[in-house]
Length: 174
Ligand SMILES: [Zn+2]
Ligand SMILES: [Zn+2]
Image (spheres, rainbow, N blue to C red):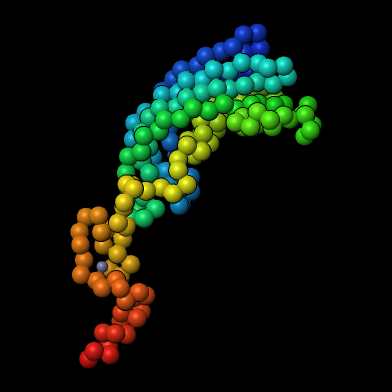
């Protein structure tokens, strides 16, 4: 969705809409976000601040993430608020950017049309944890047989360390 900043020149603009699950397009092979579990409710407040614009927003919805440990897909509650600062590329000198407002991310723009989808997409990425776990104590996959240890137990002996050594031990027993 394209937003023309000129419409927020005089007074702030509020935008509310819901993005359907089909909106999400996975673009990378190892993307931890597999898709949306529900629509995403988007609220945006866009106002002018001198030469620049401030976008404050909130996103609520559900994501489908892939667990880093057991690689299963699971539901993740998306609930995030953000504030970004849009600065025209040509008019900003580096020293001018006041990073003292350190919770504000600066996005450089050229022209007055901004792509809201891009902003929302990057805020979704920023909202997910660095380490993605389906649950705090996810048991992960057995390094030997590959079974999901959250679902079933296996009889592999894990104290032997590397699977190659386990094989060797088996051979020596014979
Ligand atoms: Zn897991
Ligand atoms: Zn196993």
